Every structure is written in structure tokens, then in C-alpha cells.
Image (cartoon, rainbow, N blue to C red; front, top):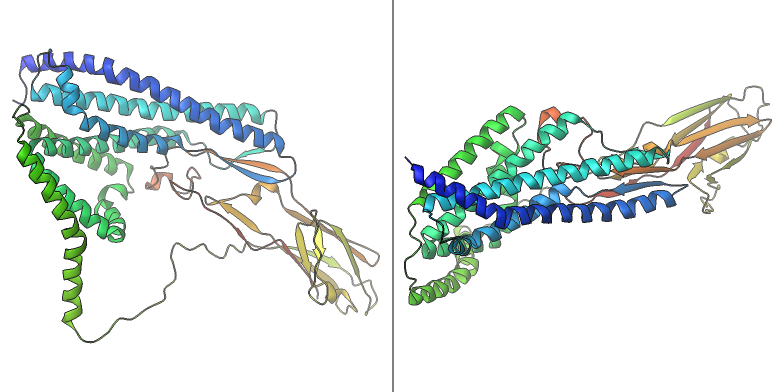
Length: 450
């Protein structure tokens, strides 16, 4: 048995004390931080919405779940470093390795639950505020769909990831406490090697974890996550159980470890890669490297949308007639290619010269709109871009218009993006972290005669 009856009692007592000392403060702090971040986001966004009357604007609301999970990982690492110190303060309570480890782990998991709950509450509050605001401002659009299944299942997937982070951090901490000197030397060597080959690490790390982070089935993900969590947790528990915490520390040995680390870092960082390079260089006297240019699979596509077409019958006009063009919101390209712009110009009209000395029976007007992609979302679709045209005697009137729109991009559970169940539901931005945007093409109106 891992624990006896007395240890259960000790664990329960330690858990109460640690929660009162760490958990409650952390929970209150998380709620305060969440409210401050939410109000900061909403304040600037609401001001921007009320100021916008004639443009299509996007308003990015930060995904607090991503901010919280990054902050939580840093916080749990700090708590792991403070493990000995925290337990020393509670030395007046009966305790064992098992009770210390389990109580600390339980508090961390409880804090993880608070992290997920706060992120969800802040999202729901923000959503409610924007829903109320949309009752008074009629041009607010939500770029992402609100899917109850995604919100609920995403909450538990989010928790699963945090629990795995905690279990892994505690395993590393247990190893460091058990084999401090050897573990430090090994971790320093691995960290140095990773730093030298950071590009390869970034590229290969997702592949090593693909069995979990790329699992498309929600049910299989939970099975794998629970299994991996159990393995890591049990390993940490066993290592911690047989760790002696009260051995006197050898200062000479501490100095030796520091010196060893100082030697290891340059050795791994410079000498080892140099030897590998020399070995490759001496292996062959020929240069057989071939540079191939390949299409980037992640590059943005052409973004050429289907054009809209207007056809106007001019068969009643005499052959050789000239048709003039007038309109609003357009700039007409002259025969020499020049065009004049002003702040009211939204579209460029080309082909006006084809309306001189017409021979055909039909004016064909093709409108190819621009696209403004922000985080994978096409914004201008919310502005209802449109071109209207009509013929009055021998004058063709072409008008371009677009409505004002406030597009709110408010994601949640950005880390939950691998599952087939949520694909093509419009609940996620193009990427979990960062920001991407770009204009593709321009508003072009092409006129010709058939």
C-alpha cells in the first residue's frame, strides 16, 4: 500500500492548511486579474464600437484561457521550486513524503480548476455584455459562432491539458529533489543541446506529442490524456516517496555541481556541434546539396472570390455610340492608366474605354471585391459590399457601397483545436496565439461590351 490510515489523515490536514495559505489567495488573485483584463479589453473595444460609424472594423478580444494557461504553468513551476520551503513552514503538522506530495498536488489541481472556471466566467461575462450592447448598436457582428458543445467539452479538454502540465512539472521537481546533483547536470546538458538545435526542437516537439495534441477524436484524447496523466503522476509519487529531504547538504559538492554545469554548457553548446560538423565535412569531398523550391503549404491562397456580374442591354443604342460613366464610391481608370483618388473612393473601375464606339449589345460589369483577412476571418463579408448599375440614355451610373460593421472576434479555449467534432463550426480563429491580417486584392470593377 502507498498510504496508511494515518497518512490519509495527515494529507487531509495538510490539504486544508495549504488551500487556506495558497489556494484561496490564488483564487481571489485569479478573479481579480481576470476582471481587470476583461474590463481593459471591453473598455477599449466598446469605445471603438461607439466611435465607428462608416467603416468595417474588427475588434479582437483576447482569449484569456490562453493567457491563463501560460501564467498558470509559470506559477506551478514557481510553486514546485518552493516545495521544500512551503513544507518546512508546516513542519509542526504530522506529515510524510506521501502526504506532502499528495496535498501539494491536490492544491495545484484545485487551482487549475479555478483557472479554467475564471477563464470561462470572463468569456461568458464578455459575451453577455456584447449581446446587451448589440441591442442598442445594430451593426455588431460576432465573427465566431457560439457553440455550447464546444464551450462545455473545451472546458474539460482545457483542464486535461493543465493537469498534464502540473503532473509533468511535479515529476521533474521530484526527480530534482531525489537526484539533485545528477539531475541538474543532465537537465543543463539537455537544455544547452536544445538551445543549440532550437529550430529542430520546435519542429520535432509537436511530432513527439502528436499522439495526444493531434488526436482528432475527443473520446480517444481523454483516454490517452488520463492514461498519460496516471503514468506521470504515479512515477512522480514513487520517486517522491523514497526521497530523503533532511540529509545535510555538502557545500563542496554544490560547488562541484556549479563547476560541472559551467563546463557542460560550452561543451554541449559549441564543442559537440563542432565535432558533428567536422565529421560531416570530412565524410565526403563532394557537394551534392540540391536546393529545391517548394510551395509553402501554409501560405495564404489567392483569395480571389467569385465575382458578381451585372449585364445591361444596350441593343437599343445605335452602333458606334459612346457611353459615359458616372457614379459614387468609384475611381475610373483613364486610357493612359491614371486614376485619381479621394477619401470617398472605395473601388477602381477599369475598361471605361470599351464604352467608346460600342459595337455590342450588352454591357458586362464584373465586380471582384477585395478581402480583409484577420485571424482567418473575412471581415468585409459583414459590410455587405455591393455594386449597383443602371443606364440612363447614354450614361452608365455605377455605384459602390459598403455598410459599416463592428466585427467582434472573441475566442475561447484556443488550445482546443484538434478535434474533428469542432472542425468547420466557426468557433476558432486561425491560430491560438498571435495575430495575422492582410489585404488581398482590391475592389475592382471591370466593364466590357459583348
